Image 1 (tube, rainbow, N blue to C red):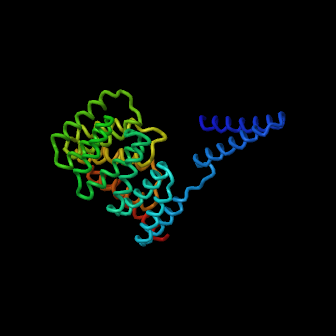
Image 2: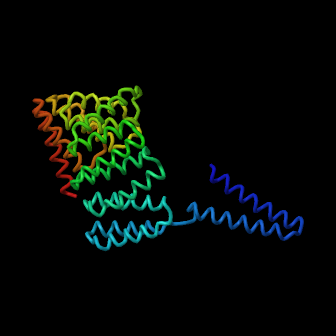
Image 3: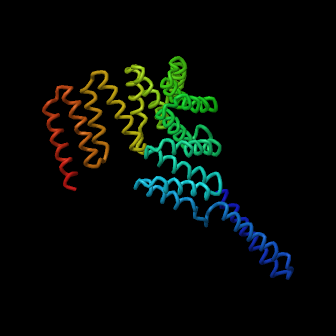
Length: 322
């Protein structure tokens, strides 16, 4: 609304200048009109209302080239795209899109500088606790862990906790510290995250990242009962508009915990809920039904397991015929 208000004010000034020039015959009012017009044009240009970013086509072209395996050309286009980005917002958007694509493509070394720049720009523009910043920071720390640099990942998450402590940041930091070998530091951060989680009485979707991170840490330290409690609460935090990926992660993690506890019948119940609540492609549905069949066999539900395997085979046949 503030942007519209300023555009309206400049437009009114232009109209007033024209009216005053006609009414008085004074050319100075025409100068006011011209100055207002130039100001409006500059404002609109800077806001990007009539500007098509030049970096986006280069990134799209680079993604197509990378998908086809032409990485030298793809990387050249990504570099050119970053040079075309004209302000911090565009550089953040470009580096985020490029970094995520390279990470999905397992180009870890190439992805790191783009994700690092995206994290820095997002932190400066949106703050350390913003969901976009947290997601980028977690992806960068995962990259460091995957490339054997858990110490860098720990320092990255440690800065986030120092800047703005939150249950999600503390739980994530605990995960990274545990992976880097600092068991004592990990336990301290984990307890800090649990205290904040337990003090938060409302089951809100905003709590999901913290619950998932804390549960992953609990699983790694074999605290299965705590992991189950965290995931049970996470399931209560799910809302209608919760992204399907998050819903799936919550239910999959709960199934993993229940199976590890030997409670296969309970795991089957959650697996059925997961399957019923999702719209899956035939290959994904076939895999999900085979996983459910494995759980059913461990729960002694052999007839139901056989039925799930037949359904999986039918789905796989549908995929093959395509």
